[in-house]
Length: 276
Ligand SMILES: [Zn+2]
Image (cartoon, rainbow, N blue to C red; front, side, top):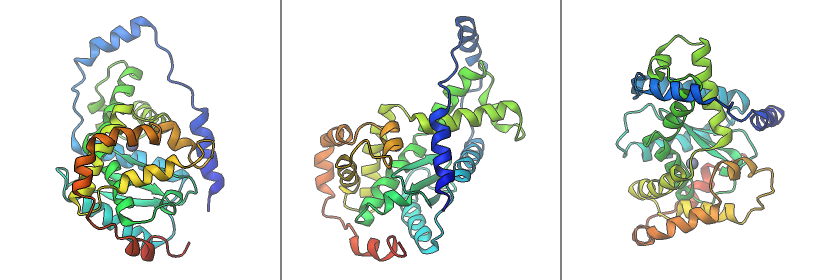
């Protein structure tokens, strides 16, 4: 496996410069031009940006070569997504061949989980909890909005929706994608992560799973050493597991109401963890 490539990606992400500083004039310009930017990115553009970003991220860590595992994760993910208000997005779920523990989504419905994280899980309910968290990011357009915000600063208010429609490989489009890639090394706002946790729990419960799947994964993460290189990127881009669990405590009545739903530990073991 391209462990070297993955390490190269992680090194690259770590080495990326903090967003360039801008002078006040440029900031004011950009604020002025925000009005000109048509704002909302259409669904077609959202899907295109997300595909380009997914292709970039996939270039560094390929999909795991286990068809049964990919099909299984894709089925669980699509089942969950099919019951959301954005069921008609072209949802794709994949397992990345990477030993690190991580999961992420790109706009438009591309969701990835690493084999490292999958191997730490004990049930389909846990898998569903993590996929539902990522689905929530897509539903709420967390990445899209953050990319738009970042790129608007960079491009001094050029209409991002126009850029998104431009031919590939233009310098502006490249900037938009660069802003997007950078986001995956920096992470979303904490409020977005906590919202994805709350919504993720609901989506998993709606899908018929024990609602404690996601909290259970967070407990696994909490028990790990934050210095462990396998969780470094995940810990850098997400609030600490303890804080996320604390925030979910407010949802305990909801969690308890759906705690009796199946965990499907055997089905998970039979499918996801085979051919390790
Ligand atoms: Zn997240």
